[in-house]
Length: 240
Image (tube, rainbow, N blue to C red; front, side, top):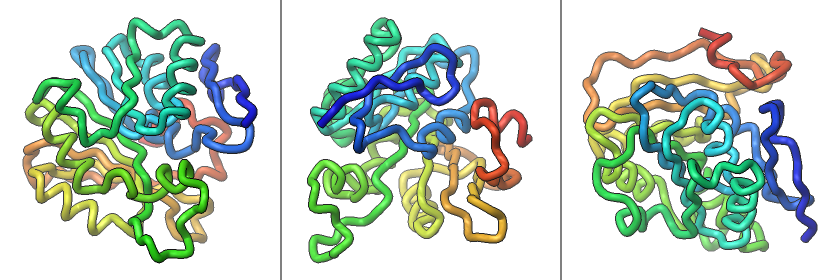
């Protein structure tokens, strides 16, 4: 497997290590990082399923907060660590090689101001022909090592009261996502649907939900057609 050092989209000066043929950062991660709202008093951000760290790297351009990224797969963790070092961000970004379900072993309860996650999108069915034969790709795409319930439970543990969880996910799992968030006391505050042409179904949804938030303040933001975007940097500032 050949490793390459690429520009991180059009974030000036940021570089990211990737395998030439797989595990490249995705549009999903860029949109997730852009969707996050950060306050001046944000001190701790935790990114679950961090991959090779695109979300922490992008967020570092918007805040001085400490950022922790959890990545289970050792080889992908190594890419993330090298990317952080390459960008001289070791003092701000810490990458942890473990499953997010073990977050309690590293971070205290109610310590995070923000949690972000671009999780595996697909449920795990051992009999499914859709499961990739490559174990690394299978873990990245399917809920083999963790599932939606465990993700939200872990976020609840580390988030401060009223603090937000940001997710990007598939639209066909939105009903389940809402149910799971409600189960752990989260209330959805913002939804934004992403399209690749408005004549087609939405390809993903961005979600902001707050821990023990109040009901009745959900906003559905204007949809985004990625085919009309010349850049994704600052995309949601332009869409409001």
